[in-house]
Image (cartoon, rainbow, N blue to C red; front, side):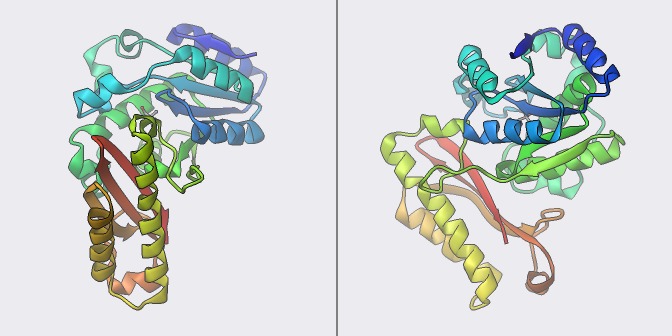
Length: 285
Ligand code: PAF
């Protein structure tokens, strides 16, 4: 049975009792509008912990685009039902006032370093500052042993990993594989804003990423040629406008060099706009 809380003090008192019984706590922070990707994180947490906590909070401070914030689907009832069916134990779904009782909670003295400036950081000013502050607040409230994040937001995962390390929080941050629709499109709450035709076209993103991954391993082209070809296919084959398509170090997201190609784990990351919806995806290479 899913127990739902909207007050910090209420969930904290239940969690402190559970922890006194030595239960391990797994945590899945979300903004709601849940899909199979989120549910796979809940399932993973259930496998690895005695208690699974999810949160739903559409965090205003991480949206640099007001329209995106307004359009973000809110459906606490539908989401709770999905969480209950997946066997989640506790849900924390606070109001903005509860999360941010004063302005000081909205900011954090944390610097993700150069990786925070790249990719999403370059295109969504203030986004990661908002993410870091809300995740720190959620971690302080829930104090999980493990926290689960989808690989689709790879840069977010790396930044949260650094946050946990910088603040010496005893939390294991666990990246989980991206869940995909049958077409290959990465699952995202924003996919539902696409028209049926747009959703079909969006399958191209994963095709182009997969092609680039193949080209990286077969060594027939330079990284800059691969990148340019990918951008060309995205812009030529659909109504996409690409914000970026970059081949990066999977460790800190700096642009990978030809030498690193053979020795380092890489990640190919892209963000595209289609029908006014911004979609991101990546593959490890
Ligand atoms: O990935 C998300 O849904 C959000 O960025 C998160 C981690 C829940 C913080 O608001």
